[in-house]
Length: 303
Image (cartoon, rainbow, N blue to C red; front, side, top):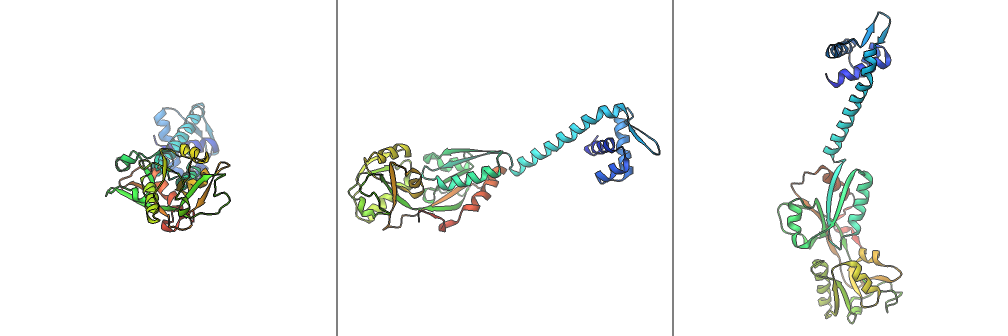
């Protein structure tokens, strides 16, 4: 038995016409007759009685019909699921994000999830210490991170996604209230509340390099391993922070506000990285979604 036999049987049962069944299935009438004959031999019963003018389905044929329809429908569903799995329409992707990579992957994931709702997206924060192994051994399908944080490995491919500028974040009632932007020199005497070097090494080093360029000795009050705790400290007026502009925009509220830095080039390039031998079909679809938004060096947040 094959699916073509069942398709032709269903068509004959529904139309009681061999010629119409042949037309519906794009085969000759003799092929339809052969398929029905083969099924009758297989089941050992007569499925139709035929005369020169009429085709009548037998009780055995009526009994077989719902099973035949179910078989054809089930096979069709199986083919669709298998194709979706092969093409990436169903499955799972795991994405790792550096703590400062928020806005860009957020819009990519949103777009991707809308287009492929049956694909599960597992989002995690990157473990900085093991990022190279995590990318190449398949722990993550993709990692978003500053370009300078990218480990050296011939097994990793990347695409430049965007650049981030840095902004100062201060309590709502700080001395910078009402300003559109500020100079880096203006925070020389401020207590700094920064994301720790272990959590965000590239951003931390970029801030230190900028302060050194302006001959500012950093007055670091505290470092933090998470954004929420740092935000609470900033909004409480304990000090000011310097963070990527997209994160600053997210944390600005009735308790804190952000100020672009006006007198320095603070842009940091970000990338999405993945293993060259990636085979996950769902992951391949995600690459296309990211390419839709990635604009290389010209895609700069905060400018």
